[in-house]
Length: 353
Length: 194
Image (cartoon, rainbow over all chains, first blue to last red; front, top):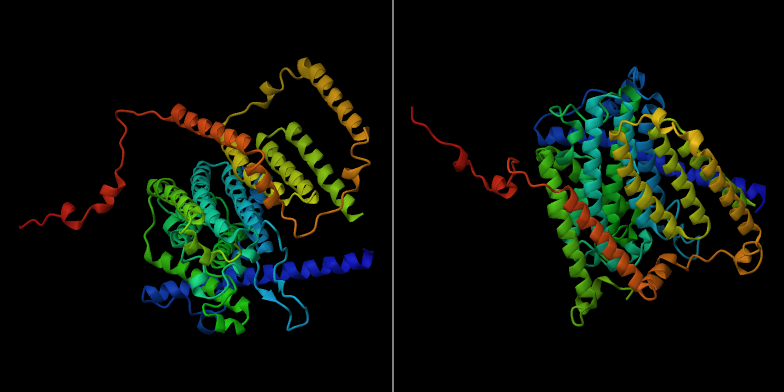
């Protein structure tokens, strides 16, 4: 490979990365807007409607406000880790997008065979997502510890326990998907669900869909599980943060939320396939983003609807309800796959067998 | 060329990070260095076409083991002065072990196993070779017994950890959540006629 080729390849990679991070950052900004408008609508009030037409410039104004605010660092804090922590929580949230297949395209017939639209088409994409999303814990732990103050460290303990607990049931829910798809490649998992809504994994794995989505909700700290934002617990690990560093944490949280929505649509809702095969003439990316958009709306809807869990109830839900539930479902799927007679039923969702 | 550049980058950073683990004064910094070291090791796995092992290294060690490690270290009050007390006393033994290891590594690197033959000239495998599948095949057939024994050992450790930490106190209060959820308005509210 000559130097020029390498430079061209590096340029293409840089463009691919930009083509994902910029839309993610923009959609994070406008999801905050959507959130305020939708919650306003649910609670029969206006929501933000002052800045720009229908309040559409509000996210930019918010961003500007946070950017211009003074960022304070506590005097006794560990300065290096204090500054590093927001970056440590944002990086995994964005890096996870590298393997997400946004669709399949042959570029209007230019290529002979369709290519998967992902920055990195990895063999172990599902494991990669699990590995990378488990890294966001470090941002939380570091933020709590480096603040050198008691409330953040208690908050960091709480959030870490929450994330570890729900990660386990999330992983087991994904094991059932792996069993049906027979692959860790996200594109293969989507292809295994080809052929309309009945082939989607939400039919045989409906309980796992619920577990995954709710665990994802707990993993990113969205509303029924948003103990990092509770006033009576003096907020969470980011009490000492202000201005742009604080915004980085919420940027990471929203990016992770979009990621959970994307993964749920890829793993359980047929990814880039339309509900009816005849509708597949519409590009797959549209379907994937539509499903993701619906799930993001569901997150917002849940925020406006459910009261917050108490901490011990949340722990109980993770360990005593979800974990046995997922383990039992793995056994059920396994028995279905290997019992003669029953395997005829499950083979409908395992076209590769 | 690019491959060896990446190899030296991952390898060199792994060595530097490992030195950081030992030399950092702050234990939290040590843990961060260790995590960085794991990342570089997983990069080396990726370069050997062992993407499954690389990802598992991050998932298990960085994502789970080190989190618990850090949890414990955060709670500890570590006095580095006390830790460094016997430094000069243990230095000769440590230097000896390090020297022996260094000679062993150099001898192994120059023994010829890695420089010629099948291993040195092995090409990268194609995309169609999925090493998750290959590991699964060999783990569940040839090494099934060892795998099961490892699982049993882990189960015993799990039960042991629970037995060690569980204590039932008479005065502890427990919550019956299903009873709490079943409560209706009539159970709590009483209309009083004034």
